[in-house]
Length: 116
Length: 113
Image: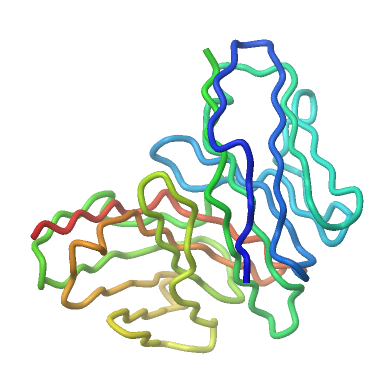
């Protein structure tokens, strides 16, 4: 099966500019996640979708970050305006809905953002 | 804030040796998972252990879980250069409805030939 697709792989922008990342999860995976991974740290959950509804966005900086998953398939994460501290890898992951109490994530390769 | 904390932060071993890393967490869990991340890549799931399990094996991987101490360990036996990567534990909180995994900061493992 095809993996989780993300684009672009790399993006360099100036602070205060905007950027958008796209993710296409594995076919049939109802749950989609966006994680932020700062260099040297573990991934931090930004937002979790179940189909096209938001399950958790408690750690999403809503003044500058937005995400959508309109048709319950692919998703877009946007940052506007970007700050220096937004430099990180943005990882998209997907999973099937929990049926056995275990939720295993499949990650994409990530989109590396550098804010200058 | 991150739920799990891995120890050590970094580990350097030679091929053929065993690598052991530990993970401590704070709240009750449904299960605990270990992921590997090669440089510049996404994370790959390695193994999952449920809260009612104490030990699990998968190939050269052995995971233990002690819920009374809120800790887990990952052992990689007979390491290979290809095992060079960062390893993360992730906890699936008991009260979460849809498996909101929380990751630790990771252990960076370097295996030299």
